[in-house]
Length: 110
Length: 114
Image (cartoon, rainbow over all chains, first blue to last red; front, side):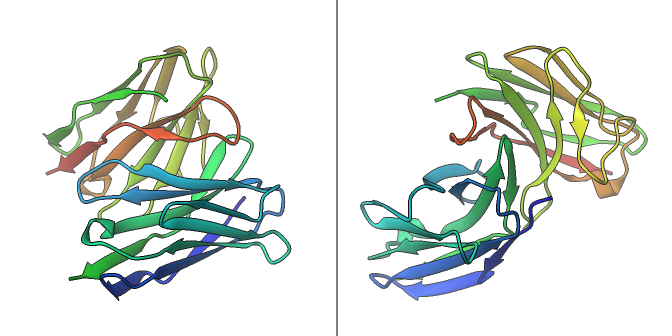
């Protein structure tokens, strides 16, 4: 089955700086890569996703890049704000089943 | 998008008992899933709830412990049977309409077994 590794496990950044989270996947058949944000006590919510036919996608301060050859993808958050503090999960999917990374706890220091 | 109602939101149960969690979606969806999220951990897929047939379980999860029903395209239940403290966790229902589209999650059921 698919194995998704995520790094780092924790990330502390100064407000206004950038945050980068990296994930690798094992199954070359995976073709959908979403990122979820989970605030304490809340459900995971999609913040951005990318499909295997696209190398990069951006939505305001958030961007995701995908390298299919190397089987890794990354989340970039620019101009971080206190409300970006949360746990972020990457995931990979082939067909319907999502496999999640271990998560990154992001703390934005004011 | 899909709106998912999951209940109960939390419960405290005695060991050896069972709890059934319900998941109701506001529209018909192809795939429904049940996840477990232990404190501070990632989401682990328990099973895929198949409409009209037996659920498909992931490695480490068995039907006797986690029986699942899916009577129609908008509803599913997960039962946690013969509970022990190790079953204390958050259980999440999730749905996807089509491949390569967003997965939506219920608000979760926080289960504590004492």
